[in-house]
Length: 69
Image (cartoon, rainbow, N blue to C red):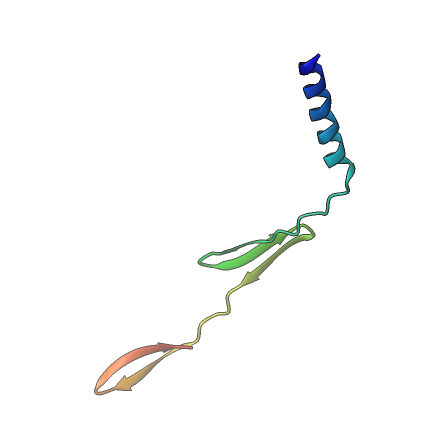
């Protein structure tokens, strides 16, 4: 009888916790790669490309140095 009451109490507690409405998780996962970055969430995904770097050679102290912006 005692084990029956323990099982019934456990089932009642489990049913009570499932009766409440749960909210959706709004987790977002982002990653940054070499060529592009992206984020994925509950409503879809977004991919962003890195802008093309503009490089030029500049003379610094008699030595040409490559500067990228």
